[in-house]
Length: 256
Image (cartoon, rainbow, N blue to C red; front, side, top):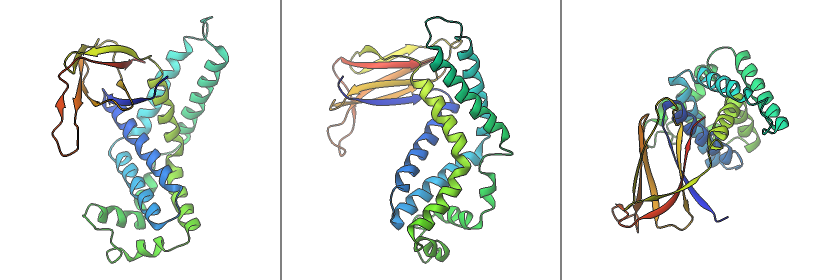
């Protein structure tokens, strides 16, 4: 099977937040693998973004509700003879464990990090362009000069606050993406629009194009419909334009 580039568009705020957090968790894990001060800066920047998202909404409740909804839907499949029972039971057990762990977590996720003066000072200065220079935050400069294993220890300790909910988000998105197979469609002169059934809400639209395709996908949508535009931009200095020919691509509307 040829390699594909996947473009995704969330169709509700819950999945939108989950995708942003998935991106930040992946980014911070990547930079944790490095030992330089610049790696630690990048890891901490991602951590602060994660803290900011959790500070704006009760995402723990959102994740729990979504896990419970998915668990109830999957439980109905237990008597279906066509379902791999061992795989289903393992998945349900994983979801039950995550729900129990989130229930056992008192208060909002990561709330105690708000009282960390070191992190708060960095977060305040990070809103200023160049505000994290060494002369602005000598305490941060001092921390960055500590041995890599000490910086990693601190970062890991702070990130542990989000470990369980991060696993929950990862599972929800895996189930969402795996709920529907890709089907081939044709965008006439680079454009496709489809209506959606509001009673069976689509969580996410996914578009797959071959690696090396001259087009990329712009997706927009809401509860009632979504639109895909296949755009062409020969170089980054040129303005992108919609395809002028019919383009075949693969699409999945994730309903679960």
